[in-house]
Length: 90
Image (cartoon, rainbow, N blue to C red; front, side, top):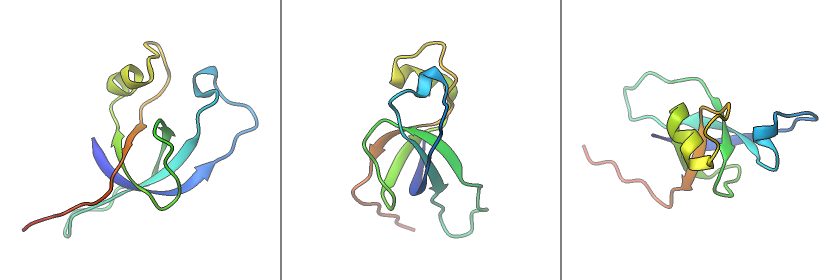
């Protein structure tokens, strides 16, 4: 699981059946100082997140499929929660 910030939405005219009635959001991973930045990625929304929200994302295919209840789904990343606050002590 990773923390990320929702930075955009994806709009499709045709989508896979497993994505039906689910929003696709662009997520930017949040990093601790000194970490190498990762690329943004697309995640299925399972928690009513919106642009600007800090979210918890399951980025492991099997776990994502279990969360969605789709055992044979073609999904890797799913937003499983909206984070209220983050505290990093160093």
